[in-house]
View 1 (cartoon, rainbow, N blue to C red):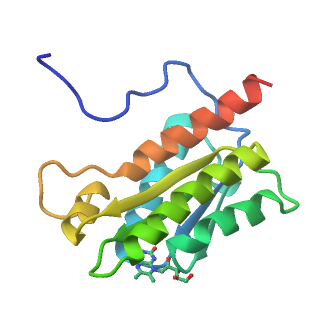
View 2: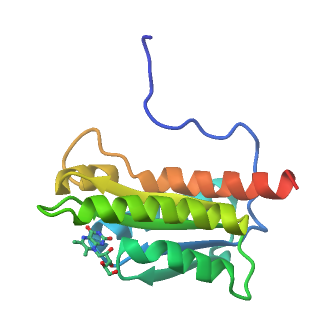
View 3: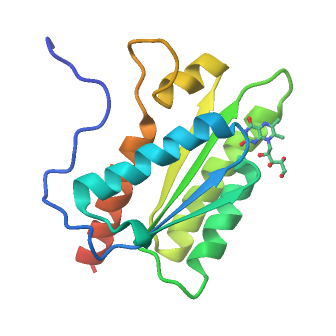
Length: 167
Ligand code: DLZ
């Protein structure tokens, strides 16, 4: 294996996202990092798939624990969304908070997607320290840095497209 590239390959289909409506729900916890993840997701959907900026709705909640409830509320609102991206950053501290919240949020986000039939993208970084979080949001000083918000933007459009075309 000589030229292994870590991460996700782009979808092979040409996807036109101009009719898609996407909701991004993000936390205000760790907002400086979250903000860049949101930017990466949004810019990717607009520049790669022609999703209209006015069709990307951005809402915030306090922390990651609130993300599944907010995703469900947005999906059950009067506006139809083709996909929802939940974005948050959990950073491990010295108590068990991190473990409880990470588990609840990942299970909750999966459940909302399966229960409602609308793809809900897991855009939550679960990091052991600040540097890990910065690197995965494309911030900080390391060469390896990569903004995972970009991947979540690709993922949301692909899943929205598949949901519509698999019907
Ligand atoms: C309480 C808490 C802690 C300690 N850490 C984080 C974190 O790193 N990232 C995050 O998104 N939220 C954190 N929270 C807040 C919880 O997610 C939640 O908002 C509160 O417990 C209220 O339900």
